[in-house]
Picture (cartoon, rainbow, N blue to C red):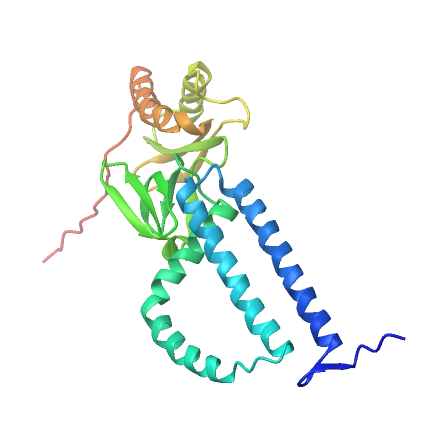
Length: 267
């Protein structure tokens, strides 16, 4: 019967050699699998050079882990190397902490894909269109035309509002009318404007309703949905149409008003 505990040399047994070979084969398979998966997942989101860097970093990490695992099994003492590597690692770690954080965040962003190039987004208060997603940073083209570079570590941990993920987006107005005006007529006028606009969607269904009785006006809420790419077009033109049509029907948007009561003294 084959004895797995038989010592081959020093303190290394046959079992240790089998484990070492098994770990090496598993590491090779893991590197091939990770390389294939990353090529498929990231080929549309990063260029070839950046993808090669990502795969190389992951492969080197797997090789390092294999070395630290297999060497003790085959009788190589790594204690001195670990101490020296630890000192160097601490020094390099402090120097490259930000770089490594941005690198890993960039990889996770490309895998998770919460944003894509061309999306209109708000990242931690910065609004714009995603221009590029690189390994270390993401660049937004602001709505004012300026470019903003954001480190990927900040993008990955920030609250992201993606305006283009959903195919439709809601336009919302609050329209105030005078108390003496007919709110039912105003709602009817607004609904006709919505029905005549080719960008206003039927589903989700638009909603127009009295929301609040304010100090100077009866406030009417207007909710209407539009395709996400044409949302801003509808938002801009419909507000002016509402104002013009209401005024054409004798319904006015009031100025702020206050009623002041005075009391005359008998003295």
